[in-house]
Image (cartoon, rainbow, N blue to C red; front, side, top):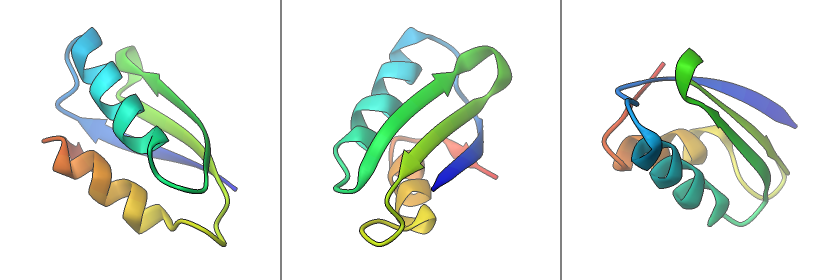
Length: 67
């Protein structure tokens, strides 16, 4: 499954790395792409293993606002 998250608060390369690294650690996540210029995080994941709510929580734990 693929989902695009709208993320507010990303401003630099460190933000990109922080989100990418934290989401990639979740079991079931296949691919993460952070698009800083658009404020988007594209995630491909196995919905049987991890939920979109869990992915959202991990991004928010890094200090970002997910819509």
